[in-house]
Image (cartoon, rainbow, N blue to C red):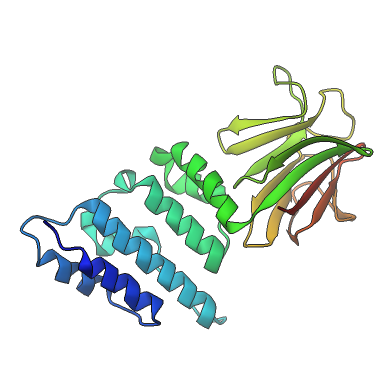
Length: 249
């Protein structure tokens, strides 16, 4: 039976402030086994290494620093991980999680482009992981009436109802994430695809106005079509007769 003590020792080294060499740790463990190490175990090593390096990056970063290793670089250095389509959803999601917690706050669309074979299972994993990055409630209001509440997923599109879609207020899966309908098809000054919201760290959300013509007010500041803003919670999105609030849960 494979002795996994080396994995525990590798994790302990990161937790105690060391900077262990991943290849040395994997090779040392491989010597204890007559068979090649299972890919799942290799991925566990990579997950620990990614978390450690992104945490170290946040602690020491400056303008001249480069980002820690990406999954593509791990694949190059450790071909035993297999092809991109063979990487597990858990490993990919862990890179997203580490970057959100310690790094550069990647977009969900980046992961859809990099790992199309694992989508939409990956999308569901990122939604679940978003609650570890930021815990926020999205609520829809018309005047003083609360219409709907939901948890903020990893990617949310907000807009009015389109032909053939459910009545407002409802949220449901779409290819890129989740979509929230806040108003009927007849709503004025509100586009079918109006705003997207993505967690960006532990207390911020990236708000993008994806409408072709209609602006949105973000905390009373006008965001025009095509513009994007990283805002701190709490956030109020004003669509005229409708208002969406994003607050810490």
